[in-house]
Length: 109
Image (cartoon, rainbow, N blue to C red; front, side, top):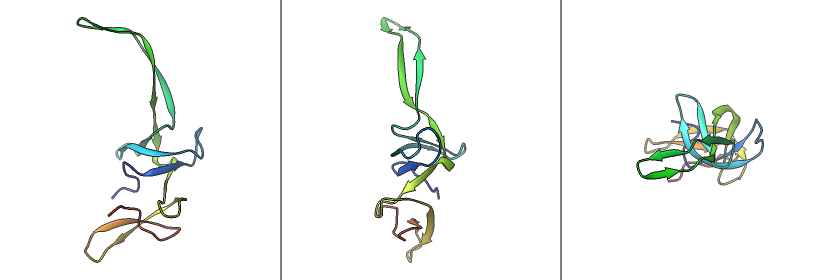
């Protein structure tokens, strides 16, 4: 089970965007990286392209770059604080994440 999942709200703990919060758009577990909405904004310069009879002009595209997992912490929905994540097994056998600060479940049921 992953500590950070798509759709979680996370807070940046290191880097140029320190203290910013955003929703996780994508998780790359093999690379230990996440993409957070509105954080680590990068620019890419695109050349003009000819696609058949359609012309795409040259432009500068803004996009979110990847962040390392160690630089973000999950924000607990109940206490609204950045927290470490623990795991607990329910009586029905399902595994859920919980907040280490307020002991509330993070996963939505």
